[in-house]
Image (cartoon, rainbow, N blue to C red):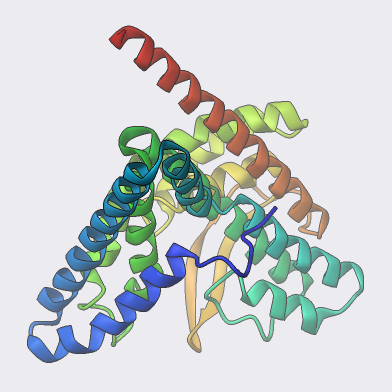
Length: 302
């Protein structure tokens, strides 16, 4: 199931807090890079402290309440179901030959301009989003939850939310969003590369192309302007036997991205379903690894 609408979602609160701090920070310093650093530190530090305080208070009330709050925090840190729901909506609209609805649905997943996308462009946007968010929304939060518990998971979500809010290379955020983008790059560096192995195993289990996933992920992942996004996208391209990347419109500007993968099958809505299958298998595999590692670590401490 997805996130219940009636429950407060920490990520929305983090995003609103970041936006609320932007104006005062800009006014306090003419150095926009410094102002962005202050906001990033405040939001990440505040998120970690708030999470720790909430866990401490809940655990102090009772162990049951503490466990419930811990589970809720961890649950909100992972985006597998929401990601699947958004991409499924794209697929349903395409099946109905409703391109305007498909463009709207995919616009909820990506930051690029979607009004002029054809079916292939819509599918490409959806698959690329599923691939990138397999790291951002699943693997990386699990990784930091394993290392630092719920505080680590929410600290990572603060980092990722800051990047989504401020990490744009435009006139407004080029300097102010510098810290948010760089911290996000650092946080995702290991998970993005670690993910290649799990995407390849998921490809094997789903009947896709595991060897190509690993080979193309290693070959093309470094081509992307982002130090991390290219790895899962290239691995998905290899696993699905398609080519991703290329030109896209963002804020009315044509950006050229490198092609990821070899020319192969033409993109169609079936690739959205296959991408979701890979994403869910990666989730299960990585969760099992982290759980097993946690059990092993506790056993050697006893």
